[in-house]
Image (cartoon, rainbow, N blue to C red; front, top):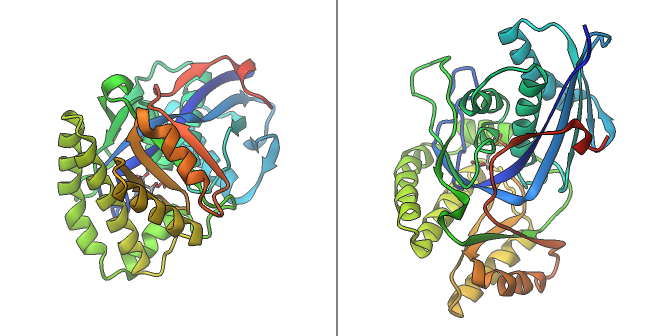
Length: 333
Ligand code: PMV
């Protein structure tokens, strides 16, 4: 049999209603619902080649061959797909992103969305987006959202154990609002605690984990409502609340993603708000601060964030389209 090749491009996404915590049964089902925006500025391109001549999967990130945990996670997704489709060939995966991996910029979101779509395309499967989203979710729940563009919701998994598909869904197109996300990069190294172990530690150790689980669904509904009303002040303050509540529950377990620069950027956000600008912050499993604002204020906010000592880079992102199949030649190896 010949080599079967597929390729895909996916953008990263940042959640305003945070997924933090997994259901305790197997299958990587989130314990909280989430709502994100897909971002044009952060892109991953991935090529998958199923090759009968290979005796194991191989994974290259930005041209460098990966072993250990990164390879195991990639193979995990391919294994699930092989089981479902009775495919036996191993694959070579080439992936590259225009931003650093594992630094709290949601590289697993764009990475697993692109991988899932590229692998499904390589096998020529006629799967709808929801099915590809479910495949991506089983590796990284935030990746389920990157299949879709604009604003995207991923429901929580049901409380009782299930093996049923759980996919993200689009709730608003990229053109629904003229909002921007200005990202202040506060640290470039890989994060000390990955999101899976951070969530696990929070569940086991945090006295506030239960409060977080109780709070999150209501906040999520309110965020959906504020988005439908295109109400940035309401949406943004709810998003900040979700981020701070998630981090508070994690911090109470000793899981700290902020660094000093994170706190300085957050102080700047409050200062700019006191000065009359409309802007709100959200943070994930890393030190970066993402600032939500109206398009017309984005350049001024980006300039202000660049003045914060220690900020390495500021990236302005707008709502993007979802993942799509591309030509294999569009992926650099
Ligand atoms: O899907 P993961 O394992 O990368 O976890 C994502 C967790 C957060 O980014 C902190 C929140 C979210 O909803 O994206």
